[in-house]
Every structure is written in C-alpha cells, then in structure tokens.
Image 1 (cartoon, rainbow, N blue to C red):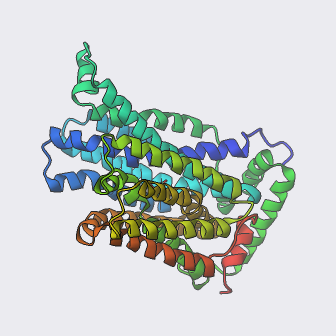
Image 2 (tube, rainbow, N blue to C red):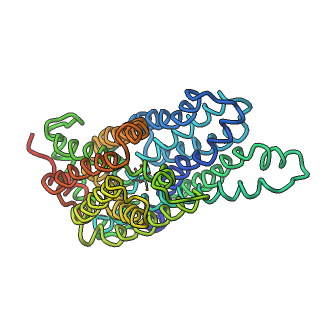
Image 3 (cartoon, protein in one colour):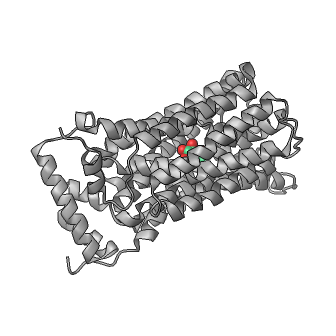
Length: 460
Ligand code: BGC
C-alpha cells in the first residue's frame, strides 16, 4: 500500500470515462442531419427509413445486455475500450458503406457502442468517485452527452456548408460534396480514437477488482488516487459489505433489492416519459406547428442544446451540496409547470408566441439540472457491487425501451390528440415522477456506495 504507483487524479479519470457520454450524445444526434440525404440516395421507403433510424436503438439494447455480462467477467475498463471500438467501427463503417444494408449494420454497431457506454461509463465513474463528489462526477457524464449532441449539430452544419464548395479531388468531391452524409458520420471516429487512447492509461475500477478478490490491487489504486486516508475508509467499507454478503448471497432479483430496482427502473422510464427527446429532436417541428417561422431548424437546435449544456452545470455544482432529491423535486416542479403551460398555450390557440419558446427553454433548463443527470447518478449508486452491472443494465434497458416507446408514439399522439394533449401527457408522467421522487427516492449524497447499500437494502 505504501508504494502505490502514481495515478492520474480522480477528476481526470472520471472525465475520461465521461467521454463515453459524448459519443453517446453524438451518435444519437448525428442521424438527424443525415436522414434526408440517405433517404434520397438510397430511395428509401417509409419502412426502410424507420429501419435506418431504429437500427441504432436496437443496437443499444444489444449493447446494454452485452455489457451486463461482460463487465463482471472482463472488467469495466475493457468494456469501455470495447465500446470505443464500436463507435470507431461505426464511424468508418457508415462513412464507407457501399450499400444501404451495410450502412444499417454500421449504425447497429454504433448503437451497440451507445448501449455499452450508457451502462459502463457512469457505472465506472460511480465506482471510482469519492462519496463527497460522486454526484458531480456522474453529472460530468451527462454534461458530456449534451456536448456530444451539440457537437453533432455543429459538425453536421459545418459539413453542409463545406458541401457547397467545389472540390477538385474526386475523393473529396464524393466524400464531402456528393455524399455529404458520409463525412457527417465519419467525424465520430475522431473522438472514438481519442477515447480509446486515453482509456489505456486509466486504472481499472477498484470496486470491480475488489469483487474478484484482487484486493491489493484495488487498495493500491485507491491509495494512489484518493489518498491513504480515504482509501482506508473505502476498503473498510468494502470489507464490511463483503462480509455481510458472504453470509447471505444476493441476486439482482432478491427481495432485498426490490426497492432500489423499483426506484432505478421507474426513474429511468419516467426520465424519458417527460418527452425530453421528443422536444430535443422535434423541437423545430413544434415551433413550426406553432406558427413561429424558422428557415433554420439548426438555430433552434443550437438554442435548446446550449441551454441543455449550461444548466447541467447547476447539477454539477449542487448534486453533492443540496443532494439528489432537492434537484429532482425542484427540476420536476419546473418541468410539470412548463409542460402544463405549453399545453395551455396550444389549447387556447396562443401558441404562436415567444412565450412558447420561453417555456420550452424553461423545460430544457429544468431537465438539465435534474432528471438528466440525477437519473444516471441514482441508477448507478443504489446497487451493491455484487449485482451492480446486472441491475444497472436492467434500469438502462428500461430507459432505452422508454426511448423507443416515445419515438414510436410521439408523432402518432401529436397527430391524433394534438400538441396540447401531448404536452399534458408528458406533464402527467412528470407529475407521477415528482410524487414518486418525493415519497420514495432516498437521499444518497455524501455516502459511500456501501453506506448507500445499507440505506436501501431492506433486511433479507
Ligand atoms: C437522456 C437522453 C437525452 C439526454 C439529453 C440523457 O440523460 O438519457 O435520452 O437525450 O439526456 O441531454
């Protein structure tokens, strides 16, 4: 323990892991700028278009399941590296796909990367971060998602602009001008390669090492990163938790894990049922249907994306100070209010106003300071190490399932029930989330993962 090698700082380690979030955000947002080109080029039918969009999501689900099995066997770090390779492969694959089937395959592989990163990055951060800054560190992951989304909008816009030039080289003419969507997808390979390179230097999760009985290595890593005092406390906590578990083995479906599982799954599903992705991705369409003229959907996307990014800092600053519950309850109150009022504007025929834009910005800001980061924080800190990878995968799987449901039903709801009722449906689910968070969710700030475990686990 005294001769621990030097390790990078915890903040650096967690920021590197958070790049997984950036790739997640980029991959899910890049498609919006490429869709119309791909549709034209391959003369896609409506069902092929649907397949192109949903293939990523299908990959996500596969990636989540894969991670739940792999991360206990080969470790957290290797799975992160593998997710980086998926993104890299997908970036290249999409850019050079000779036909539509291979393009869809490459999107599917990118989806696997997203699914893997959405489980492994925040879980690795949660297992590494000290109790007093775990909220902030996992919120970095959410911040990275918002940066990835914005990066995709900007890079799509940049390549669109570039495509107006005349390139002499036949390769550049093809890649940047004639089939611009290829360059849009290709960009993802760059942060993916950087992610892989940076991951190599960071240590393995000490909690995973401890769980496979490599206690000395775990101790050395903790010693070299959080310092001897904090390392001793964390190791003692891990030893205590381990000796309790050895008396009674728990599985993810044990009775004692029902409450945390209920909390994790409910928060994951309700995070999506507030309509965040409908508003992020269909935002420009909502403005148009409200009669607010826009020649440039990008301007709205950038406004929404920037607010999303900036207000995540509120969570970064306060998750460990005022706690997860405080952020959830405040943010959800704002979310419910803004959604109800948006619905009211449409219902009373007053949607053609700047007020709609303000309310949507308020909704995004409230999401960014609460549901966005706090859902990921809580999912990743409420389960014991023994079952964490399986339990987090179940919650994240539910989250992606909910993304799918919203994606399928939002356009239908908008058309059949109209925008007022669509907003009120999102408000209704957010109200349920507010009540649920108020009555059921427990505060976890400043507790080690083992202390959180004690808080949640009912006696067997
Ligand atoms: C959600 C994503 C969403 C993103 C927006 C994340 O926490 O899980 O579905 O697109 O936030 O910032």
